[in-house]
Amino acid sequence: MEYFAQQVINGLQLGFVYALIALGYTMVYGIVRLINFAHGDVFMIGAFIGFYTIERYHLPLALVFLSAVAGCTVLAVLIEQLAYRPLRHAPKIASLITAIGVSLFLEYFTSLRQVFGPNFYSFPRPFPVVIWEVGGILVTNIQAVILVVTVLCLLFLQFIVFRTKMGRGMRAVSYDYVTAGLMGVNVNRVISFTFGLGAALAGVGGVLYGIAYPQVNTFMGFMPGLKAFTAAVLGGIGNIPGAVLGALIMGQSETMVSAYLSSTYRDGIAFVILILVLLWKPTGILGAPRAEKV
Amino acid sequence: MLLTIEQVNVYYDNLRALQDVSFVVGKGEIVSLIGANGAGKSTILKTISGILTPRSGKILFAGRNLVGIPQHRIVRMGISLVPEGRGIFANMTVLENLEMGAYTRASRQEVAKSIGKVYTLFPRLQERSSQPAGTLSGGEQQMLAIGRAMVARPDLVLLDEPSMGLSPLLVREIFRLIREINEEGTTILLVEQNAFMALSVAHRAYVLEAGSITLSGNASELRNDSKVRAAYLGDVME
Image (cartoon, rainbow over all chains, first blue to last red; front, side, top):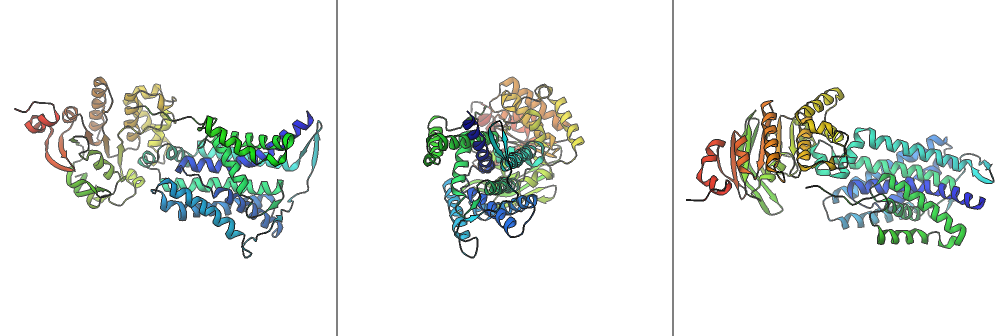
């Protein structure tokens, strides 16, 4: 029982990080109907910014997060404007292939020796690890940081989406961008903002991931990216609470498979879930097909 | 003139949808564009509101050429389009939809006042204020779409097929409201397939055929024109 509870805690840690990535997938999809496959690599860049700001510049943790947020936001806005915007009215497949191209570019360009280099680097601990024992379950201060930071991010996102003008613009564009434009919403600006917001969360996720699983590499974004994408589909792509729910389920299932079956299958479970979702409920748990009244 | 369209040509790829279209809308008027399906009526409204860009020609609004100005800026200049099919944000509440109409306006107090005005015009919307807009009936959605356009406090409202899919009773109700809005000082350019209703509410009208304007005049004259009667009002040609 304690072993199970311990796995639940570990699964939550993983699920929260997935949630931060999955939100970017789902918001961008909600706005421009594009699976932004470069998103996992933006997460990787966030982890590297964390790595450098801690290892080289010894910045305090808050500034580490802010640097990752700033770097990832700028990067994602640039990617959107240079790679995706020119293809806005092209067939969807063109943007999708471009997204894969951008992803490969980020992975291989950053693995050049002049950039980050091709090696695995160990991510420095920004604070000493403390382990608490709560009723036979081990909880670390890393898990506490992940929990607090993720919850703060979710509250911030909730505020943006439901309490600000930009958020109202996002919801309008996501529902119908032509009509949103008729209301005076600057659709291009909303799209840039959404890419930036998703990337900011991924940047935070990258730093947290580095702290929790202390190793970085330029290809590290691929797997978490795919799993977060699966989480977004599982929850219902385009649906914000769905992405968080999907990510928590993904975190649990991956941890449970490692704990009770074999860690060999931990990556496999993600795709089993993806296939099952696509077969039985392609709209995901919280996604509902849209009905229009005539 | 509030709005002057001059020699406008619009293409969908290589297909010419509007051919040298010219017409004017004066301040305070209700002007109607009538014509068959595919004649280019909606295309004109989409071009004025910046969704489509003309290949040539001018669109002058209060003296400024709108061609090339992005869609979201045209709203700020005082033109609101109520699109065909209403374009309601079904996932938002009625109130949120109205607030979307005020997206370009800064003062919360002023916006609340405008929304209050819409509620007096359409009391049914106030009753359903916190209801998701997708649950409204077709007629209520049309009222919401018109109300939402009014919240932007436009000088010119473009209405695209407001009678579409509504019962005759509701159609009459909607047209009564259009007249009321106009009497309060808003200029209206109305596109309709229901030529009878359009001609009964409008001051002037233009007839559009295959992308060109073929006839124009006072609404009452056109209502008695034998060609119009035969083509759009269901008369039998003698």
